[in-house]
Amino acid sequence: MYHTNICSLKANFDNLEILLYDIGFDPDIITLSEIWHSESKKHLFISPVLENYFPLQTETGTTAKSGVGIYVKSNLDLISRPDLNFKYYKKDSEEFEGLWLEIPKTNSPNIAKGVIYRHPSQDIIKFDKSLDSTLKILY
Image 1 (cartoon, rainbow, N blue to C red):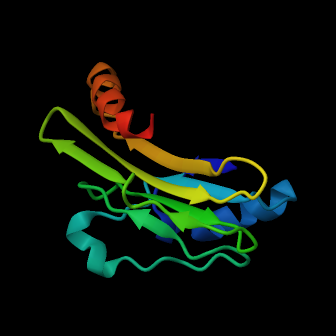
Image 2: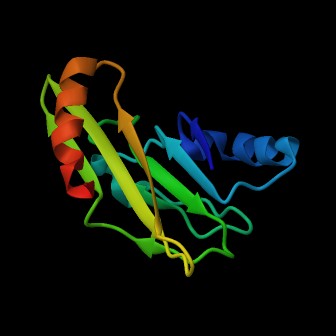
Image 3: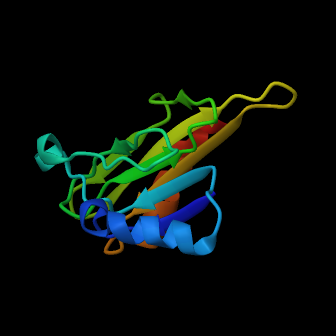
């Protein structure tokens, strides 16, 4: 698995491809934060195609620079988990979003993978408390 804050998927997609080439291996899962997929402009967002990966799945954010996404290697089975996805927003207090998927395994438990993004201007203590209560459904 590989994660990066992409700071605009559209503007930095070529850099992501170069990075993957330079590291010399293709991670099974690539998670991205700050893809700049806001709820207000979701009709303008087009997911770039990354060769050998399932199309990008995204969760919109409430601000222009928010949003998270996941690419999954095309040889892996995938179960989308919209029941676990969330977008939490309280004006001027907390804001974060999460996107989840599940990879089925035959001889072991399935694997849940996700990406969660907290906007840097938000209070970390409030985030921790809110995230704790939000993720209780995973336990």
